[in-house]
Amino acid sequence: MFKKPEGITPEKLAAALTSQKKTEPEPAPKVQGPNLINAAVWAYGQWSSYQKQLDEQERRLLDLAYQNKGWFTQTEAVRLLGRSAPSIVDRLKEAGILEEMQGKHGQPVYVVPQFLPPSLTCQYCQAVYDLGEVQTCRQCGAVLNS
Ligand SMILES: [Zn+2]
Image (cartoon, rainbow, N blue to C red; front, side):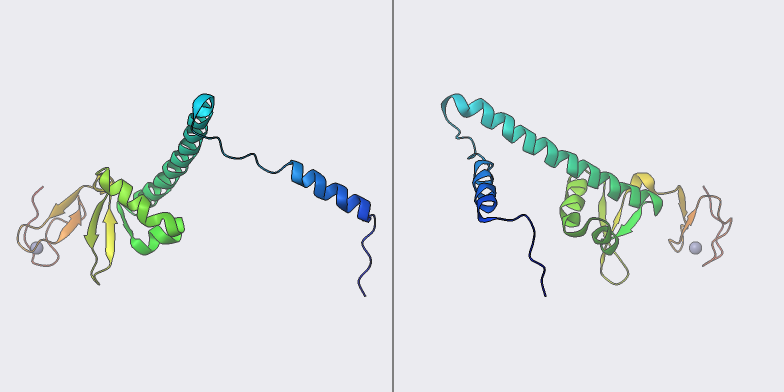
């Protein structure tokens, strides 16, 4: 059996409903006359909090890239940022921070060239090694020159 909630009377309920009505949000400011400034302040507040959020997400994505020596996959981005991942990726791409490449299986992978460790590419077979990792190419045996 449900226990009857204590302390709720029709009078109290009516009072609660009335006070709730009072705290309803005020209508959005009209972009006219003296309210123009208020509207502008409101819009700026919305925008700056939006931008703060984006910056935070951009930073998280770049942290991820940094930890992965410059690389991350689309899956990793979505795991980190959820639905907003594609728009953050696009923003960083437009800013020239991020480059989109195609992974082995055709899936998009992203690279932040700034975060890539210095590397050496074999002139003969294009194998890529970290600087100082090997002296001769493991694939074709060519001597690697820095
Ligand atoms: Zn080679």
